[in-house]
Image (tube, rainbow, N blue to C red; front, side):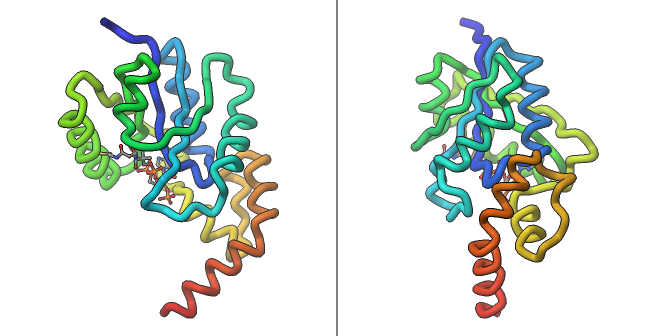
Length: 173
Ligand code: COA
């Protein structure tokens, strides 16, 4: 059966203008877009799950067909529980492509009925990553162009944790 619901999964630590661009494109393509914030066991996020969810909800509040949720476990299982068969992902660069195809093929072996659909992230946002934003913010760089104002404010509130992260990296060298 065709589905009109797509799931856009990610860690969103924090959500950037690049993510928002993918969300907007997805919202135009599908009847309903679920932005699924991962309880990521392989990363130690700067923002807690509830902070990441709150920021996502705030920056997507104008998009009527976008819903923000968290998920744990395999993404394909979550997608099926949502009554969907589509994982939406954004591709920024050629290196993204390689990693994304690997993930899409792995997900297909776990659930052949779930399809991954890619959208091209816009050129202006193509070099942004959450790590880059966190690093620049920790070094007091101006990241206002790359994140929504609410995220910029939240990053200011994380100054102490961001500086501690940079400090521990330097000590580790
Ligand atoms: N604009 C800006 N940044 C983007 C972006 C875009 N369009 N697309 C990706 N990024 C950034 C992310 O913010 C992230 O930055 P960071 O590593 O600096 O924090 C980086 O690029 C990598 O993004 P991504 O590959 O999307 O990783 P992720 O951690 O955000 O999400 C999951 C990965 C959650 C989708 C994946 O791990 C997953 O599905 N986990 C569930 C468990 C599972 O099913 N595993 C089997 C998968 S085969």
